[in-house]
Length: 361
Image (tube, rainbow, N blue to C red; front, side, top):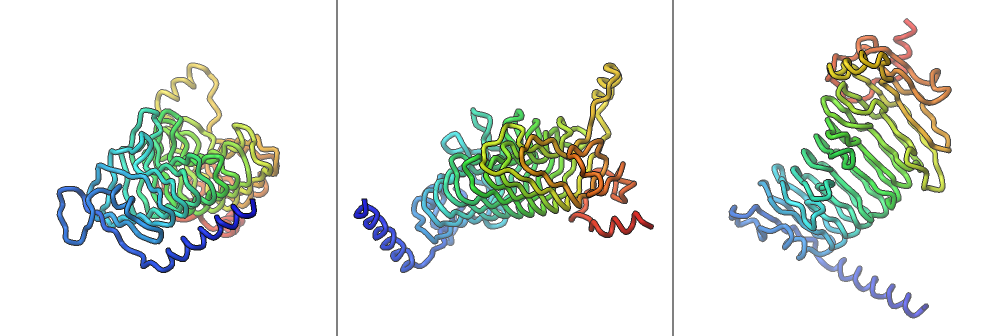
């Protein structure tokens, strides 16, 4: 056994040394039928196959009805402004199937990904450690879906718009094999077909500095942390629009706990519930003579501590966490809170202390 380990370690060291001796390359891809002296490739998969650790595969501007499988470790796939993957899923999964370790995907637009399983995504994460930044995901069954991915999954400064399918595909769906999921500085807008904006089963989930808003979408929860774990949700703007099919903003451990530790810190967020129900909802309420409760901040079945503090809550009918009334600011409407009318949203969470001071005047 010791001999095998030593041999493997030696092999890894030799490979690492070889990589360090190589100069990183940019492998530039142009769309088919668009000849360019600056492009070596017109098929993304060919460039990905040629890439070595440390290389960057660059997508030139244009629409690509193609995708690729990323197997090589430590490469970057970077799109120039206008690079757009559209309408093509590989392996009946996604536009990009990521199997390598320490992959970065940056600056790409991706849309219209559909598959037979109804969970087609722009990115299917199946490797170890993935970073996604500055990507525009729109009009897909799902923006991102993790398969047997592990390690740290970071998504930042990206936009998800009009993704979702049949309540089974979402803006973004992270599986239970991911150790740490970090979702930072993104916008998730108008999720459709009863999908959640962000769904995570990861061991540790950090969702910070995002805007996750139903707006005119027929979505479900803004955030669904299906199996609990260690959860931090902070400094987000979370909006529930008038056509949403689920009036709970956050779901926590509703599908059972699977992680050894469970706790949640939900702080310094702005929650906005916009109620103007469609006429059919008002008709149902009238017929049943029992208006449905609309506007719950969190529904939790977590066995661990759930701390909800220093949030600004607008239009909620119920918070859902005992003892939270004195640790958060509540307003009945946008106008009462001094916010602009629907569908406008601020760029950042209003200052909590400023709101407290204002209310004392």
